[in-house]
Length: 350
Length: 267
Image (cartoon, rainbow over all chains, first blue to last red; front, side):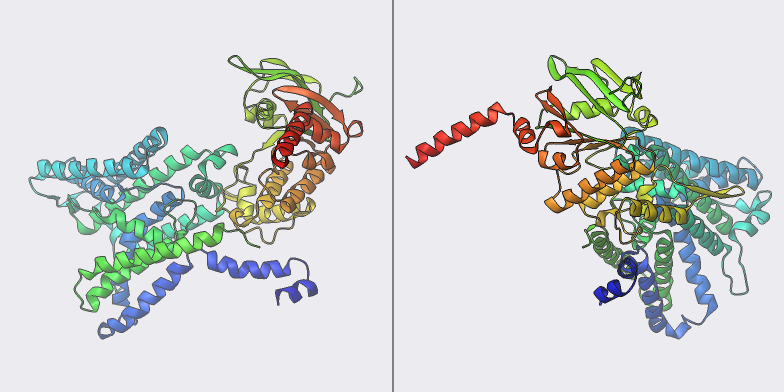
């Protein structure tokens, strides 16, 4: 079949056709797309009593949850493609929200400059993570685990000392709160879709564009795929990785701001545990644990899938403890699929 | 050899010492545009040391390097590259999981801009890769396929094409055929000739005289850090090259010893 196409047409016509099929199978996000559709349809059946598929209010619920995961999962995926992990991405949400709460309620700042300071704080933590990893060449898994625990202690002890409780409340007493809340944490329509969902979709598009269409994106792939080879051809690998760490912590700080504005208060344990959810999203999106490969769009689909599982289990009236089991099963299937895709991408084609 | 036309790259009396070990002693060689100079030698002959000096990784302890007749002293590989001297190493500087076009332009991405936005001109990159590789006679199926799916010979050829595209005047190839099968090695040799025909000066390092002889215009044979002589294509035949490579007299002695062993076994 391929032979006749080659002899009848131009020389590389056969090749393009083979390429298109193989390319589809090696796309890192194809599994995430099929998985998200499967989960959506499954809950369409199991949660049919609440009209899972047709009710926009239901969709508003799971997209809210998906945005919660998906916003920070974007830079976490880019960082993983760049060959590194950030285990402090979850706790950074708490630290940033608490810092915003402190600045708004105890330092009596206007919320807007306070938000700017929080973002700077996020970038600074990322800079420290990035510099430590690139200078010491220690695994980022260990370095950011240390950051995670340091911040976890600061969050709990700092909050307790400040308020005598485990939370900072009354963040809405700050000047400028309502205008900030409108931009970051309001509802969009009568079905109460969250504006957060737009941030999630927007960041996913920006992240995908960055990875696929920019020079920096090319450097991310190479920094994770083969840092020595990348250095040999002049790619600033360390700078690329440091920027990725800063993006991750910076976006986690943005998420902390969104949560603080939405909830009007911040718990000292907020965000802990989410770091693994972000990594699951990225792995579902085809990101290899070894770096060099993955998709931001796929990561967004992974976040959607986890959001649906979280809300779907409640809507199907199952015991919500099963959520963890589902998350684990999804992670396991995704890793197996990625392994197959990677083998395909690395084996010599004849 | 006329004084009015200096060689593109020449080394005169190059020596290199590591402590009290003599890695290279008084090596001279040159290469001109559109020519292939082969550097032949067995393991430990000093090939690697010579490449490292020519490509700017290390500096020689004695002798001179000349580019276009002007003496130069390379401080880094980047410095050598700025003189148009590109080295394709065995490990290739390619990222296996990345596509051919992404690899080809890695570190030198063509950009497009609109107002404050700047992005990687992927369309231009794909087209350039296709036309460049076609000009080298390299038949790739799809510029989007990961480099990891290419065979060893195809990868070497891609690395050569990349160096030529980015303006290499002198291409130093470090054992490009040593890890390859017979057919793949033939493919790489073909692209060495393609690069030569496009006016590139090629320095081809190998331990295999059968790979060197068909493509070389000039042969420099190294043994234990010393030159066993430099020959033009017409001054030496393949058999003599093989004999010199194998260490000449030593091979004859080895043959004699083997004869004796055989005689003993049979007797």
